Length: 470
Image (cartoon, rainbow, N blue to C red; front, side, top):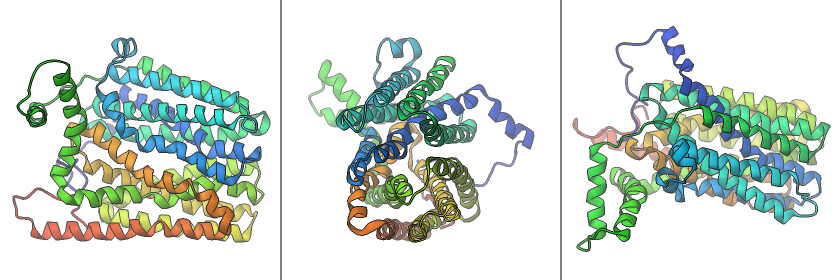
């Protein structure tokens, strides 16, 4: 069943404002603030911050664009999410538990990769930088899987909103540290020191892992019966105990069951949903790869970029995220998705105007305001939609599938963004990035039509659709 609560009426008995705010005093809710910081820290260090360093030492735009393909690691994490979900790695998982153990393993990999980048000269050994960036990306994606699973399992459903809220706040602080913080350090000292400090900040997540407790998880009987039935179909008449049986049982429960469940609930329309998930953020992901090189090429300083694009930009994103949450309540989920898709495509055009105007801090602030507020709004609404698609029996694996898919097309297309800029210039590139948002707009309209038709034809006993206010 889809996640509940998106369009349903609130319960009759409501908590007071004081009781509502008390959920943020729960120890595990507080812990998510620091886990969110640990999750957000590596992201910009692989992309916009690293692209700034590379451009500064003379790396070509086309090569910087190709570096964005490192991010494909985040888009294919679904392939090893079942391993993180069920495989024990002694002594980490035996001492700390499965979720905390995998988090610590991933954090060690992140810190090691950042130190490797710090002490490698990109102007002399760019290939080694690539290998260390891949290590950071793989470890960071693994950490995301473990944190998502922990967040879902650590508390009861009533605290999930607070867990998500503190995670988002922590994540943004991680982005500030990796964006504005790293630029400030590099501006006053050097890039190697900046990345060394960032590696040290991974210790925030490590300390959190050692302090929090492992969640206790039980699997419901219905899930066990469904997985047993699927295993019998896979094995056929050749059921035997042994290594092969255990391997098939693991693959059936961890890999096949979540996929079977999603397609069983959505039928052939699941393909349309997956296409929409993959294309919704295509426009802003493509633009984001060339943003920092663009700022450098039109003459902005590190301090101006840090203050406006990184520090103020994160605040603008948080404002947009809050607006997205309000919008879902006011006009419904699918309409909010449509507003987000239109805004992302439209606000990318403000960068085309900035490219024409040139070095102007007021115009840069306007462009950052429009882009980041729209991206925050679209992101908040999109996460709500992805959550509505999951079955709570397979939340971690299914969410990994959706979160992997929604970045994959963007990373592939963004890899060629440097070639586009070199061929047609920045102004036309921003028109191109904006046009990439058109498929998402058309697919939202089709989703609205589909769910409206489904709702109109549903009988009183039919399963509720995702959207009640489309």
